[in-house]
Length: 619
Image 1 (cartoon, rainbow, N blue to C red):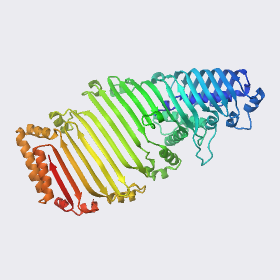
Image 2: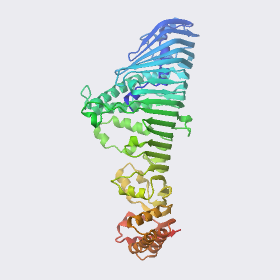
Image 3: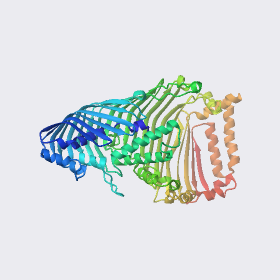
Image 4: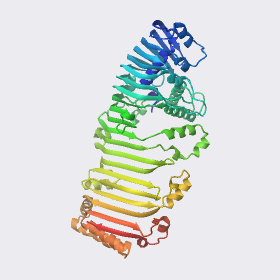
């Protein structure tokens, strides 16, 4: 995430800030009273309101003045809780905020707030707005806002988050800050960097908690560290302007971002019709490097139909991006949907914050399993990339993916005890390469693309101390598919221990109890035989007979004279002679399974059949 993006305005938060500071600007307000040229200077944030009107307040002018007078004994949140009015309105409100070297000016127009009391605003609206950003490494930006509205804004909690910090060692609870939020549209001109816009946005249940430092201070720190990191990247320097090591700045930046992440619960909502044009900075190529010229890069046009989170996501939790498309020059791509549910960074944020506060020597001894997030379910669908020859410099490239899904559950010490992986219809071209003759053979066999699918489903069963490989499959449409399943025994809880040595001992103690394998031929064997016949200039039937003989006699010589070996070699030779489906079922003779120690004692390959039972068949 770039620093420019980090400092990009968040309009839901800005609207809440505007409402808070309208309330803070009330020293000159009174019941059914109008005041001009109100200005509130909070240092890093200055609020200017040309005209303010208050109706239906139960406080007289003097009470308002006492409540919001400079140097009042009560805290800002406590004073806000006493503000009461039926309506507060202002034709215009301007917020000027400085973050590092960057200055952002946001103006809201035709503001109307109603039902104000007990530190909350029942409803608020702004008909339109605009913003301008100047200075800093991101350069100048400007934008416009359409109608913005909200319900149930908690002014008191907002003020606490902005100006207070939690007591040492206290993790405060999240408190709803905005019950419901609506914005009809948002446009941002980022100058040389490009432009972006978002259509209608709705959200509910937005909550925040008081963190280890006030939000205003935290945002200021993030902005300064972000600018410092960008400058160091541009100048490739190892120290900042004060002589501090760059890693210290990175550590402080990361710690601040984690703190901000932990202070917010976004609730549920959606944003529609996202559009952006990103113009990458020019880069010097080898030809123009000595001439000091930069080569312009193609802009990236990016669109998203819908972004949803929480209850608005398809699984009623998590996050989803739908209908994402991008183009850059002649290249283009699309993803129908990206989503996750049950995913959580909570433990990772907690561990990282603790980690970054420690000396580097302690970081080196970290158990990185503690930094594994709760994965839940992650899913991609309808992915495609189309790059013409003018882009790749060789041949056109078209890559597509039907579905990718990763599902992990029941974590123990950070390690999932169940795992499911699905890859469906990964279509990729086969392109000849001088470094890889196998690709040339594939093209010679008429295989100009692969349509791959794979599946893995495994789970640890604590009651049995077993790891069940429920299914494993891998194959390509029109070629072949391999399916397998099996069971590993003596898999104890120690395998998931945070003690790496103990986990390694547990892994070495696992035993193989059974394995079932099925190989289905959909044309690959015939293509291999035909390709070998073409290379050796022989008839296809001659090569087939040779392969069948090798499978029968060669395997028999390698595996020995046991009945199991004969069964296996016979099935393999029949499969080669008439390719169809080959199945092999192996099971350890010992109820405990076949362990590593059993394998190490084998001096000849044929001895393996003294320890396992084998069934094999070809159809």
